[in-house]
Every structure is written in structure tokens, then in C-alpha cells.
Length: 234
Image 1: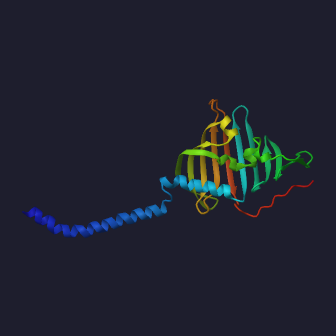
Image 2: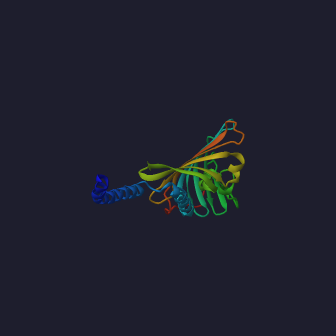
Image 3: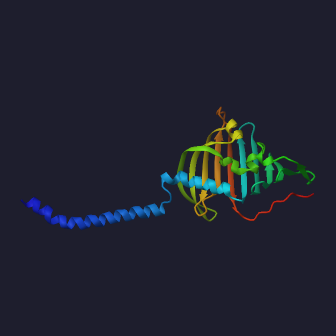
């Protein structure tokens, strides 16, 4: 009859101990939730918020570096600024040639690299064409049909700002990219404070897997600043 007595006597001690243990476990869980950022279930929602905020911005500065890999290699590196809905300016190099474009409303202005004079292309929205869509409209690279695979890799400091780092494999909604490439892979940095896209690495392959592919690096900053873009004069 010693066993029942032992259980009865020790149960009084076990109850408060168990209660304390539950409190400790709950505390650890809550602390972990607070400091670990969004859960995997929230990853897609947080990233969609970043997409929305990025596209809703009134202005921003950007830097784009594009590489077309393979025999018909292509390289461009430009920096610029964009003011919604229809003003953009870029300056850089495309195929080792200096380029500078300004678009205001329906007119595009191109600087002649030899004479230094501005040429006017009336009623042409070059930023919506396939030729320089990545350079003049970097947000076009973030048009997605859906994102079947998305993963939070962790957090990283980017130029003094804390960012979430995401890995995703989306189905893009861009006719030019869809027709030429497949297997899109994105690594994206999202500002924790303002929840917008700050940087992205994009990689894609040719459908025929012939060693050709596409690499794009995009940086975006100075969201919603008072940026001025005007038609140039010679």
C-alpha cells in the first residue's frame, strides 16, 4: 500500500511544478515568436505586402545590372530614378556603349553619345517596350502570376537597414521573359521597417538548357522622395 500513498503525497508537489513548467514553456514560445520574425505561414503574406508597397510607391531610385549569358552575351548597367506614373531617367552603359534616356509622359528623349545632343522620340513610351524594359522599368521584373515556392532564408543587414531575405521560384507575368526563359529563381531583400523591396538577384535559364541564361541584379532605394524629372534641353 506504499505506492498509492507516494502518488497521493507527491501529487501535491507535482501540481505547482507542472504549472510553473507550463508557464516557462509558454514564455519561451512567445519570446521565440516575437524575435524570430514572421512564421513560414506568414512568409507569403509579408512578401505580398512588400510587393504592394513597392508598386504603390510614388518615386524611387534604382540600379540595374543585367547579363545575358551564352554566345550572344549582353551586358547593361544603369542607374536612374522613376516618378510615377510616367517619368523616368536612366544613365549607364549598354553593350559597352554609354546611354542616357529620359521619359516624360508620352515622349522619350535619348542622348546622342557622340554629339551630346538630345534626340526626341515623340509619342513613344520606351519604358513600356521590350527593348529596355528591365533598365527603364525594373518593377516589371516583379510581375508574377503566382509564387508556388517561397522561403524565408533569414535576416541580413543591407546598408545599415535590417532586411528579411526571401528565396522564391515564381511564375512570371512578363511576355518578353516568359518567351525566352524558364526556371526563374529570385533572392529578394525586404526592408523590415517599411516592408518594401530593397534588392533582388534574379536568375533564369533558356528552355533548351544550352548554357545560356539571364542574371539580373536590382537595387531600389529612396522610396517616395521628392524626385524631379523634366524633359532635357540641348
